[in-house]
Length: 196
Image 1 (tube, rainbow, N blue to C red):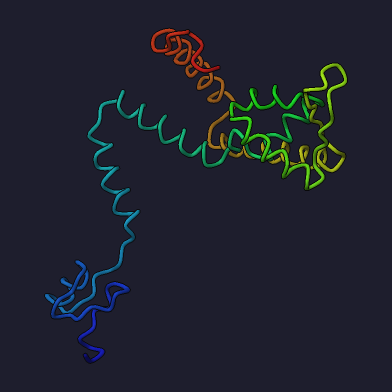
Image 2 (image 1 turned 60 degrees about the horizontal axis):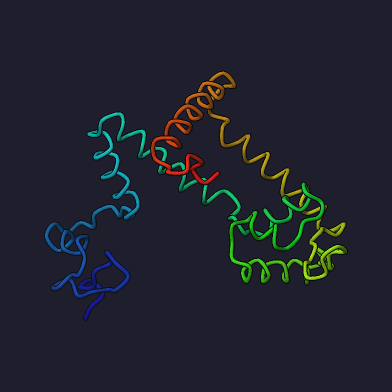
């Protein structure tokens, strides 16, 4: 097969007599390779067209959902090492059991993460003086320094996340979100606590 009979529209280098992509088909028809557009861009454009047709309530829900996805991406996970370091920096010493409950994870997962932090010299685990079956967890000096840096990074990130709105707009947004949260907690959460 000669080079001129190979489709350059995709990585499979198909024969132009039987292209396996829409770009190859268009090239075969017109003799011009269409401009390549990323699938993400196409999906985004389709999503935006759909978004424009929605009512305000639907748009609010979509925005809150999308913001939650971005926050999950940006924020430390519930059992991330940085989050654990920051919690320990704030509480100074906590039992391993209480830390596990605070993080909302399984004891086995907590033990694995704490072992890594201990091996890295960031935490110390010691037997509790009053209950020998319990282990206390606290930071080393190195752990405190990393926790302080992680906290500073989080604060900078929070500043950046809301840098597109003014202080007055932040206060208004906060007020509205608190009102919505209070209503949803009562309306949709059986225990009225909403997981907090």
